[in-house]
Length: 130
Image (cartoon, rainbow, N blue to C red; front, side, top):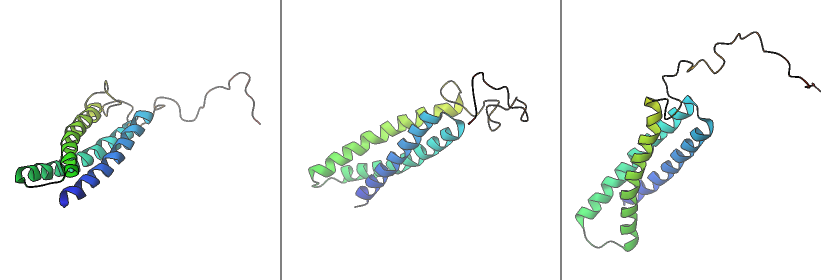
């Protein structure tokens, strides 16, 4: 009973985590890296709970339907693929080679931190304001 509940919950939170990861790929910023990393950690924790319940049901034995056995196998595979996903997302935290990284010098200052905030630059040739 609890295995099905945690499996469905792991699926829903996992999809939300993958959406945050897709947004991070699109934005490629430090704050999106933090959101993708934290949501992937929560999704993996719930999947690990479902993995433990699947192993418990396999260990107990008894007659289970083929759908439940297929779901147990998928949860076991999903646990290891989400672990790989979480390792790849968190690789950006430790090195800017794999992502934006938190150790960049302009983190929290923005991309134009060295520029004068009062001066906006020149006007482009051929532009007009309507």
